[in-house]
Length: 503
Image (cartoon, rainbow, N blue to C red; front, side, top):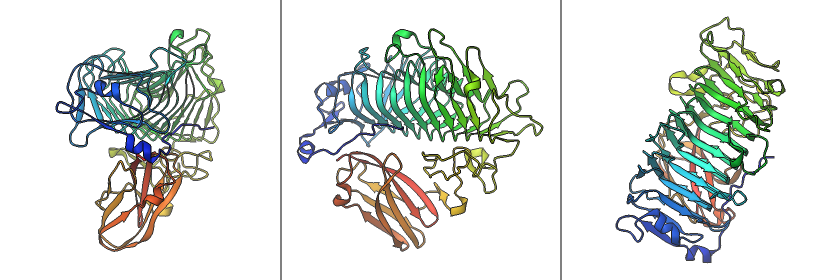
């Protein structure tokens, strides 16, 4: 059962009035983030206006609660960049924290470190990070851009990670549980883009784009000293890791199952891996379960000539015969006589040697053209959304994108509507402004983070020219705090935008 605490419950009007904005910057009440964190209370917002460089920002036991989160926000006035130092931020034993809009670069250790302060029975929890960016590291060893140890109930969404440390991960999870990576971009990693190990469990990795994302773009498992497992006594590196609707371009091996059990890689599009498409390995043999009982299905694997390397790299002390391979499309675009991948078991309903017919190979346009052999050939039903947030049909298409040609939908079309949502984040209501270039029927719906429609804001015909829709307070009163998506249907075109409610 999929359980993620997406958080942000309703708060009372008294709590709204009591909440404070703590301004950080050279001419503000607090000169550094860590100073403001010492006095922040549940419901407060720490607003960083500019950065006063005074070393790593240490934040300990900063805790909101389920009704009153603490918000750490970068001002919209300028880029807020934390540059240099060993670490930019180090958060320990924190809870109910929402972070948005920061950039981190040039750290010689880890960029941002979030942990449980070594108290394994009290993890940091309910940590949401949105619209942040990690850039080139000043490190070449086992250093991570975002290091998370003992963190539960978290969301990393719409963030960019680029130029990671040569020997480290862009995101490294040690003993983390119940988390979501959604709609992030990972480019030019060192060892890994995302690594989940040390007893990590129930992690969803969905709708991300990985380009040249290291030796192992998604490393499901790893090798962790037993002293660092959370909780102690766990006998697997990772379990229940779900990799859905992502696009992988390049990487030595986009997918690595390493000492993991009960994990799945489903409905992804994998293009031109450097050596292997998949690795099945066991690096930790000290009382650990062998890598086993994992699923690889509904994926497009579009590869170069594999004369030098097999499609799968299978290491010792693993149980590859327990894996499920089904409904994958395998295509070697440089060798029409390719006989297929070296699978350890017989695949069910696989497709071999048929071009998936991507729309635009040159610009990461891996949606499916009409007539693609991947359309409708997956194993279903599929409960999550595709990379454009469309529902998968039943049976689903293979790969990260569902076919929308039958409904004449042009997903993520160019921004010809001059669309804006203000204010965003919003407390009680927001205004939607758009400029149509021709008369169209407009349907606007609000979706929660699980992809469920909660409100239909508008469904009517609009005339050419500027139009405005105002969400009413009464419409939003039924909703909790949090992150929502607004889906705009303009005739045959669809756009999706994000709105944050701070109620």
